[in-house]
Length: 138
Image (cartoon, rainbow, N blue to C red; front, side):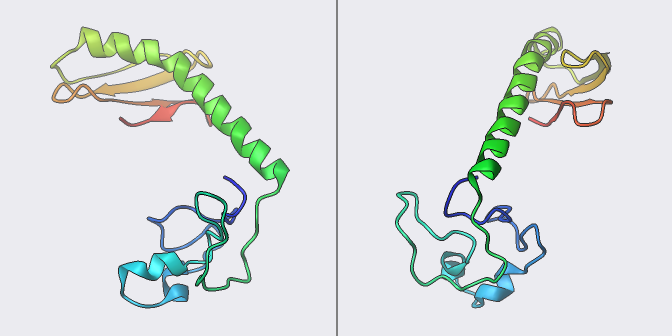
């Protein structure tokens, strides 16, 4: 989240924003450039105002508090995944080339962390039973 991007913007892959505004129909046209007209991003990567965007009455620039809360949430998520990495690495090493699933103690909360290791590519999916704890897919 940053200044110049609507706080309701979910990403270019999404047709709607968090307020259910159908951005795709708002900007119109079948062309690839239709996304350049979306109202969700009012500045380019250098902070220069963009031209040609379609107005949206729901556009809302994030406040400093919104940005700080988003940064704090990302920092917390990073903290959790830093704790999970050694567990995932052990499973990946132990079951290299073999499919495996099981439950281990969650390194964040001590709850039940369900893991699934895919031998074909070494990816691990994990989900803690505790609400809002760990959950990821590689």
